[in-house]
Length: 118
Image 1 (spheres, rainbow, N blue to C red):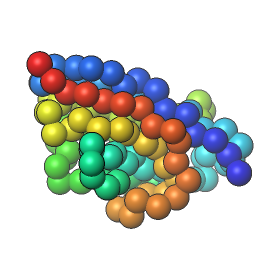
Image 2: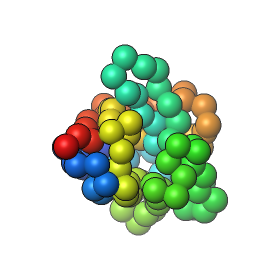
Image 3: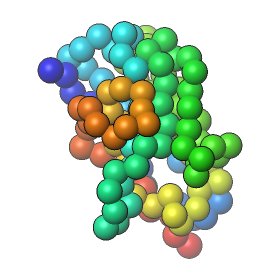
Image 4: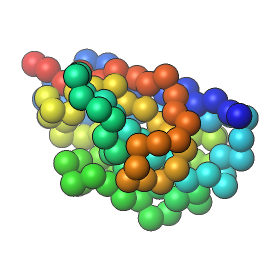
């Protein structure tokens, strides 16, 4: 069935940066599209970004386009989310999940908390 484990979250000031990581195991990562989702306090899941299995064709939600970058290292079974120019509205729990998106379904990890505040 597989497992996804996110890390890299934390508290950061507005305008700052964070890099999230998600390590996958138990399935053929190199053949799997991946995505990042987030859930703000009191809200539902939101698709953030997706990337094809071979690390091509990244796509982003309009709210993060130009600030976030998704990447995939199939040699390390890891998908990343580089987040720059963070805003308070980026606060939430971030999950990696199987699939490309923009749906929010699919197996996901336990999440990592990101808080953007001064």
